[in-house]
Length: 222
Image (tube, rainbow, N blue to C red; front, side, top):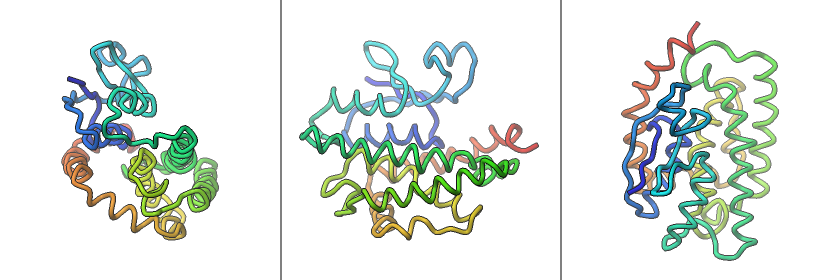
């Protein structure tokens, strides 16, 4: 049985967890936070989560784990069969990660954890990149009804665990409602959150988030 290392307040951990649940792959959760202690580094060379333990060893990085799950468990696919269509799904997933999730992450300490203010230069970069990222999502996304078309795919997993956090950053720091500027995006997010597996992930996340806050607050709050 697979072991998934990480913690339920992590959106990247939850991307892998949801994929496992949607594909109905048995797994066990091993609680672990990203850090540089020897025990963690023995599992993850960079001390990051999530990590998937397989019979052959450990796999790090969310997109690599998701590719591995698709390769080893194709019975419930989260990617299209046609190579070009697969490439389109991965393009959308990576654009969401690089141009929406990562810019928003620059401001998570201030917005989500109530910590120190984001430096103005980083805040300006986050605002600029978020506007461009949501605009790209609006141009590329199909929302018919899912991000990449008629089927639920990995692009939807990246979407649901990125755009809601990015919208919080955009709204609280910049007074922007970027999510509603993308036609169909809010409706899709609501539908995705209603999925049975997503509700299971959300329940664990909500239970873990206060514990996670207590862990990070001494570092985040000066």
